[in-house]
Amino acid sequence: MNHTLRNPWVYALFVIPTLLLYGLFFIYPVIVSFIYGLYQWDGVTDKVFIGIDNFSSLLHDAIFLKSLGNNFYFMAFSLVVNIPLVFLIAILISKVRRFRGFYKSAVFVPVVISTTTVAILFGVLYNYDSGLINQVLRLIGGESWAREWLSDPHLAMLSILIANAWQNIGFFIVLCLAAVLNIPKEIGEAAKIDGVNGWSETWRITLPLIRPVMFVMLLLTVSGTLKVLDIVQIMTNGGPFQSTEVMSTYALKIGFRSLQLGYGSAIGVAMFVIILIMTAALQRVSKSEEVQY
Amino acid sequence: MDRTATANQAAVSRAMNGSLRTKNRLGAGQLPMHLLLGLYVVISLFPLVWLLLSSFKTNREITVNTWAFPSTLNFENYRAAWESANIGLYAWNSLYVTVIACFFTLLLSAATAYALSRMKYKVLSKRVYSFILLGLLVPPGALFIPLYRLVNELHLYDTHRALILVYCTYALPITIFILNAFMQSIPSELEEAGIMDGLGAAGLFAKVIIPVTMPALVTVFILAFIGNWNEYIFSQLFVTTESLRTLPTGMATFNDGYRTNFASLSAAVIISIIPVLLVYMFLQRQIIDGMTAGSVKG
Image (cartoon, rainbow over all chains, first blue to last red; front, side, top):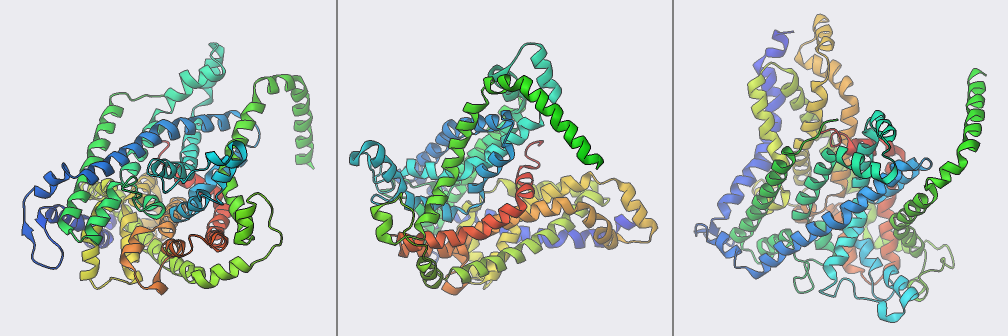
């Protein structure tokens, strides 16, 4: 066994190509991002070193703060609306005796459709005149219920959140369902003997036992909603009046449209740091309350 | 014969039990659960069905009566979408970029995971492994500006190679994570047998490790495939030539131009969905298991 797997040249051959690519397209841009953030630079004329000015400007940039707020709105909506719905549907699927496979496959369909397609699909659904949603509202409540879903600054963000929920919930349902079905049967039987049944079993036994998956869902939701980009860019591109601007769309505009490469990089770095802090905080909380079967 | 007999017995006993427990089954509230789930399934699928119906209508029909079935089954919208939206070309570009990137991702990550999990440099391997896992924390969205400049400096701007390299690299951390975990669980007796047969490290990798790791490789292939096939923003940033665009970017461009032509837009969307839905229908099980693997126990 020993010398065959101990040849340093072979080891290097297996590892170095990966490290080269990873270093060039991943680590190098991370470092460069931090460095660009310290300069004022239009990409054409010489860079001017301005220290942390870009970062301190962020704190006074109303549009950046608005976009940060929108990211948090996105996160809050996903945590408060999507996740409880995910639990409900997953637990219902685990409790029914027939069609379980059908439900599982059907709820997953939106997950495999690309975000671009989902954005376009909902653009069509939200259309004022012929979109399905306004048609349904007209049918049940009359003309006054119809809305300009994507061009009303008060509704645009909510409309994106609904489209995003439609696309992503299925993935979490299947994840959660897998965890629920993974719970050893003996636990449920023991609970029945102790007289715990039905929905109280769900509350007192199932939910606490699927904590590891809840943690994964939290983590994915938090990091996913902080870095969201595609769906916003295609549906509204941050408009109307910056009402749906998020950090990524703003960074792209600053970097590629107004050519402030330093400031754009600073927004990217800020995003990275915020995600890092939130993830670390979550991890700390979850460590303090681990469960065992 | 035997099997049929057993099946019959099982059916009989199930029917008897069933008749005894029927009341309990409905009483336990199965019906309301099916109604709720049915409602949810309708919400998940109806937008797609509506879009499919719309794709056969004229724009006037869509506006006047959204609910009606199309008056005729005409494929005019599909012809228009196919010709004016270049869907076929975009899909081909996506397939080309996706498959090559997936191939390199699998090759590199399998080799790396093999070295890190099975070869005898424990301390070094641990360091390299955690260094690569750092990549899971970095949002690609924070790196657009330096990446864009890098791609330009390497003269890769507006080429498929740029996309292939970036897709391949960005899939590496999660892929290595999954493959490494899988390879850790391979018993070393398998390799010892291979060494007895005179295999070197490369031979062990190709003839012992790769075949055993196949299930995990299929999973990560599907994950990477769906990710690359649907990727939008890098393709948007790095490719400008119309004929090189991938499907998501091409669709977004078409959307900008045809916002009011719902009939053509619906047809284009349906065309773009069909390949993924077919893949999903055939590989359902692997896709769902693959996407949930690791996160449930981890």
